[in-house]
Image 1: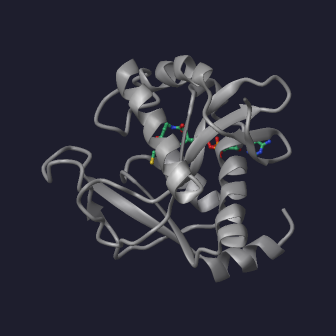
Image 2 (image 1 turned 90 degrees about the vertical axis):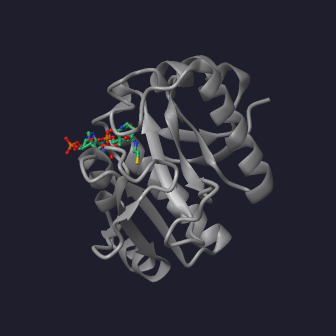
Image 3 (image 1 turned 60 degrees about the horizontal axis):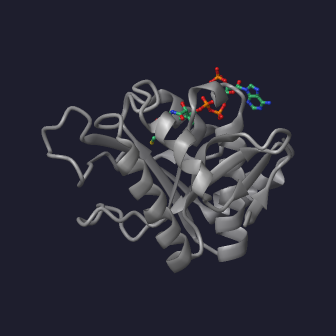
Amino acid sequence: MRTVFLETERLVLRAWQDDDLDPLAELCADPEVMRYFPSPISREKSEFLISKCVEKHDKDGFSFAPVELKETGEFLGCVGLSKPDYGTPLPFDPCIEVGWRLKRAAWGKGIASEAAREWLRFGFETIGFEEIVSFTTPENMPSQNVMERIGMTRDTTGDFLHPALPPDHPIALHVLYRLPKEEWRQSALVPG
Ligand SMILES: CC(C)(COP(=O)(O)OP(=O)(O)OC[C@H]1O[C@@H](n2cnc3c(N)ncnc32)[C@H](O)[C@@H]1OP(=O)(O)O)[C@@H](O)C(=O)NCCC(=O)NCCS
């Protein structure tokens, strides 16, 4: 059964379905999509990723969730909110993260920002979070551009080594962006 969580002008943000595994596995096997992750991942790991998201949604009421193009029903990738869960805490825990991963054909169209803005609205307005953060490697400028586009600001004191990676791993260093609810509310009042 198709469960819609949220909608935007062009997108449906919905629950995971069995037929999402093929397109998710395809994008997670694409070295260009996974350039700022340790490596592309196998179909089995993509399947595990979906099961973790479903589990988190059942527990928390949100998770990284599929983004579907309204016009065609095409699966574009996933965007959403998540309570990070790496076994070892992050230096700024407890926190709520907003994140995104889209297939290459969906880049350059404002899709990640459009979906993320709606998840921010859900997080601040519906759930009532006081702050939402995001983080990535210093080299991942497309992701940092999304963070800035949706109103987040880099916390220049917040750089950290990702706890899921060995400290000397080439992509262990991460930068942190923050968006307090009050700043979101102010920017949400500005049209456009
Ligand atoms: C990070 C990622 C989601 C960014 O995707 P993106 O398409 O660059 O970001 P957006 O969806 O916000 O799109 C913005 C771009 O669309 C353009 N655009 C075109 N039509 C648009 C529209 N109707 N509305 C808004 N922007 C539009 C913007 O000008 C901008 O282009 P620019 O970057 O050349 O200036 C994508 O690169 C990705 O999936 N990467 C791999 C996974 C990853 O690294 N995830 C993050 C891990 S922390």
